Image (tube, rainbow, N blue to C red; front, side):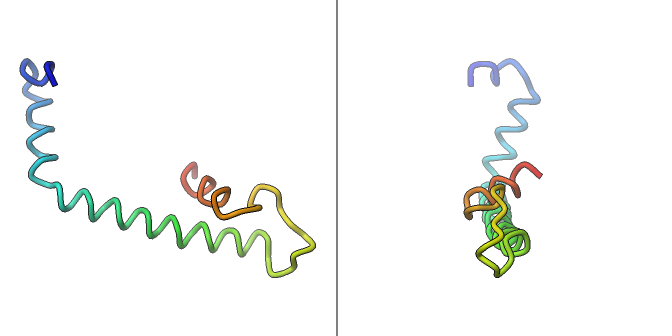
Length: 71
């Protein structure tokens, strides 16, 4: 915060984030919803409906969410 006093770019970034707070929250909501949908879809596609052939990379929803985040 103290550096923002000296750099006009940081002041502009802070002002932009302050003015676009609602849009940033909406973007975060859209990303979280997309992550939930695609992780559920990837877990279903990789594990399939057969419970005998499990892929260890997609063993749980958090593991599938991690795959969505890193890719």
